[in-house]
Length: 284
Image (cartoon, rainbow, N blue to C red; front, top):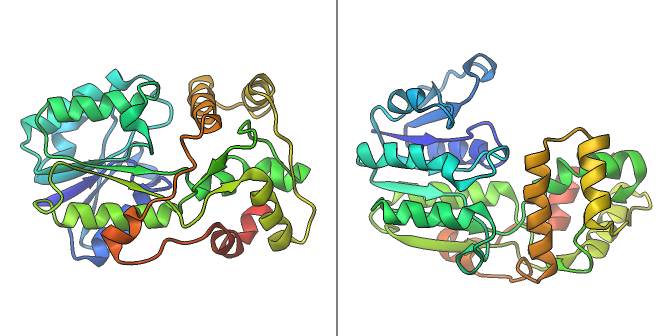
């Protein structure tokens, strides 16, 4: 049997695939465009076509699969968008689904992750929700353009603190959960990095790493939304979801530091300074 990894080319999915292969698991790498997936000579990785908005792709992607890593594609803003695939997993008697959720979502009904978790549980699927803090890769990815081009961090998080975690660390946790489905059946895990930082502190670290003056601008919600939609050309639904997340961050929902990563892996999570140093090329 195989483990299906949705979003297999994404920030987290690619690390999940790598860690599962290291653990000797057979992987079905779910991708939206097979022709762009690249060739792999690894016999433990099979590329499968999966469109979470097209039920016609579900059965083929789930063939010979008994465990699933499920993530919500950023462009799908409504939790109902994932319900048909969750129903399909139930029909295929999946032994464990690890859903990439969000820290604090068990007490917050605003993000779509909350209702997706509840739907998985109501369907009777064995689950191991993974609830990480914000990805370090977000700063090195979608927000890096302003750092490179304008020497500024343009994020509407105010002075809130965030316990950032490396997506590679999330990938290792997910791989462990899916490799031991009976041990982690019907569990939820909040994992964070080792410290809680505000964006002024993030800017200071990036100053040290890049040897440039990086400033945190503290934009308002409207300025942020206009910039990312009108100037960056990002999808409106995606930007609106990030706005909701940053609103929650200002309420203090992203500041908590947990030992969840250590409890699963027996290791300490990577710090943002270490991540920034290893990914300096993203900021220069």
